Length: 88
Image 1 (cartoon, helix red, strand yellow):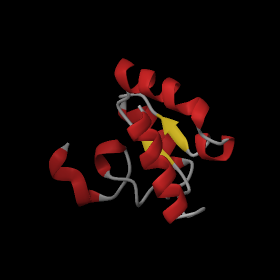
Image 2: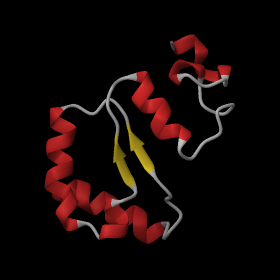
Image 3: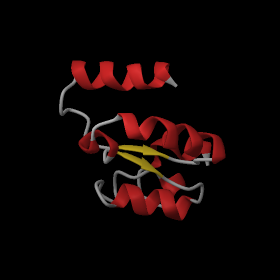
């Protein structure tokens, strides 16, 4: 766990305020447990940048659509961008 905390701190020190948001899709019980363990050690502003998203394409699309135009979101998540279509 300390390793994960150290990684987050290094990234934030090396790239201050450049990280807008991190969407973590397909979160399972393990990822949620790790997040609940690491979260209290982070500043509130940092905590708010990490968004745990469920596994459904609808949930992923809705999370992406808050900040990304529909034409940029990959087709596999319900958008229009065909870049990753071969993976669907």
